Length: 231
DNA sequence: GCGACAG
DNA sequence: ATCTTGTCGC
Image (cartoon, rainbow, N blue to C red; front, side):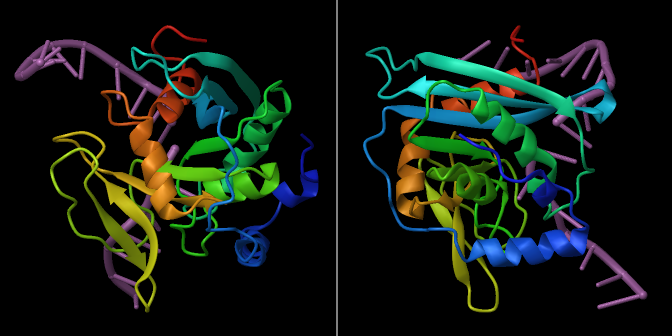
C-alpha cells in the first residue's frame, strides 16, 4: 500500500475543509465488498502528553471461532510525532497519516476496516473513516463513541436496536445510533467507504463481544492506549 | 453573537 | 485523547 503525498496532510484549516468538500464526492456509500476474510480495527492513542501519536491496527480473522473469539492475525503500532492539534471536523488530518503508515507495515490486506470515529456522519460528509477508506481504497465503517453532528432519538434498550442519525436541512440519513450493549450509551455507526449503512450495522453487530465496542475497534483501542497489558 | 464540537 | 482512585457489579 502506498501513502498519499505528504503535502496533503499539512494544510491550513480552510484548505483542509476545501479538500474535504472535494473528496466527499468520491466516497462510496453502497456495498462494494467482496468476500471478507480479514477485518481490521484502527484507533489512535497518544504518548508524552500528546506529542507522540500512536496508530494501532489490529487484523482479525473472520469468521470467529466456535467459542466466538476472534483470532488476531496481525497487529501493528506506528509511533510518530503528532502533527496537528485536535480540531472538531478536521480529525483526519491529525490521525490518518499515522494510520496510513501503520497499514503500510501490514503484511495482510484486510477486506474491511472499522475505524474509531465518524464516516460520513460529518459536517462535510468526510469523517476520518471515510477519508482513510478513500486513501486505503478499502471498505471502511465509522464506529464512534459520541456524536459529531446530526439529530437522533433514543434507540431501543436491546442490543442491536438502533435509530437513524439525520443531518442537514433535508434530514439526510448519515448514520445510525446503535445500542451495542444493554444499559450503555449507544454507538454512532456510519458508512465510511464502499459499505452501505445497513451492511455496516450488520458487521458491527456481528463483531460485538460482550462489550460496548466491536472487537476490531476494541482491540485497536487497547493497543493504541497500551492498556490491558499490551504494547 | 451564542452554542456545539469524533478523538 | 489524556490526567487519575475508588467503587459498583457480574
